[in-house]
Image 1: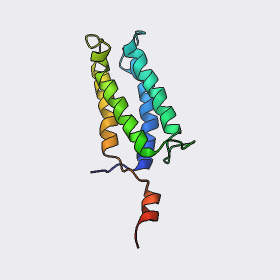
Image 2: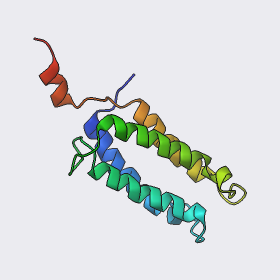
Image 3: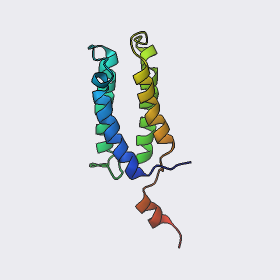
Image 4: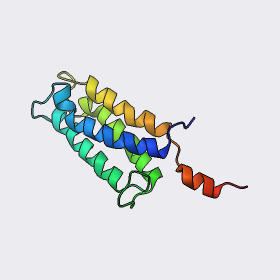
Amino acid sequence: MRIISTRTHARLDYMYGILLINAPWIFRFNDGTVAEWLPVLMGVAMIFLSLFTHYEGGVFRAISFKTHLLLDITGGLILMAAPWLFRFSHEVFLPHLVLGVFPVVVSLVTKTVPYNRRIAYSVW
């Protein structure tokens, strides 16, 4: 069931990007390793992806929203697996796991067509 609007998804994207950038300091794993820099880089990538997505939060609108959702899911899966892929699970894993689940779940429950386009395409 898709219950999140594209407008809400856009807002969540920017907040999530900011959270990822700050996660190493919020959750205290800012030790200069890949465990720290991966969420920071993914947060920056999330903000750039949002800026270039064709939805209410996009500025340049070069990437389709369906592609955006696919990249959200892919990034979330990578973030969830990162502690084991990059072998830092013995130091920290829970923030990466939880922060990786979020974009996957949100993407799976987000509507794929903006509200104003659904009205334009509906049959009277």
